[in-house]
Length: 404
Image: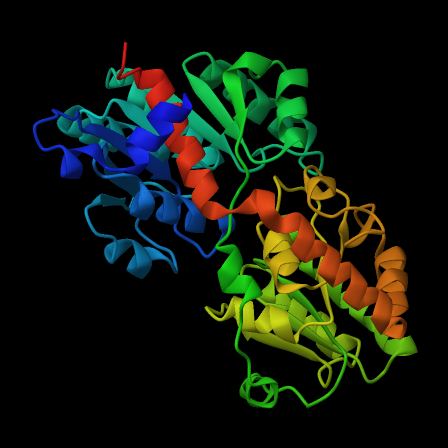
């Protein structure tokens, strides 16, 4: 987009020049479930902050999720909640969802459908094609297939992505690693994909007023102890049980350290059982989903993430903005945020011993940990969430070409 057009958009021309006729384009975002995750939060932020001089936003999503209340508070957004749009593979419900989304799209007539997540990405793009939507965009927040699936399931998902890519106008990826993987698997041509980082409100995580003793007490944590945290859904992708095993090894060397797990999900009962088996109940704290993540990050000495696969986790730039060093698994886009030895350390997936060793090293070298945290604050600028929205707007306008 030209600098002149960028300035023109930012000035909201319709309000300044009412005699100028400004087209209003309907943009439909489709996402499977509004759970408390980066893709979901960024989608809602985009819907809330699109320039409504130009765009009329529509949300189509599943019926459940922690963020449904947030979606209901969005101003100027048309919302549809579909019971049939679920995460699990269910041919009957998936076909029903396809028909329901197609019906909504025929009714609303958006010029662009923008899908997120694997299930909504497949079902939503085919519904858009069948409804005759002119432009179809899909955001890759990590792929639905991975090396930890069985062979047939993985090949099926790759096949579905490959045939669906043929009806997709443009792709957005949050990491270069996902672009390289998609190109390598012939899911899209490099000219079809744009790198747009998954953004955060940097100041909200950087500029935090915190009464540390009060916050620790609220979370049931003792004062003045080393604190290592993980913020993630308790699902196989995030390998939260590896965090427990890592905590056990750290506990053997630094018994005063405590471990905070923020999140919930299908593996919670297994996590609780493993904590009991390893006699870690005194030092491992499960606090569920929280809305005070900026404050929690400012409590941590180290953020740990044990994922087996990712796009590029939003919690990385959040920790960077908060000045927290990161110890994590080196999967997909992780190296694009965590610079080895600079603002954290990266280990292979399932390297529990290696993760523990890095955590122990940073806890025993607090000056280095603080320096790494400071480097994170310096590197976080490319993850600004408002830049993310503007880049999406530019992509929409490039497709729509409103100024011939």
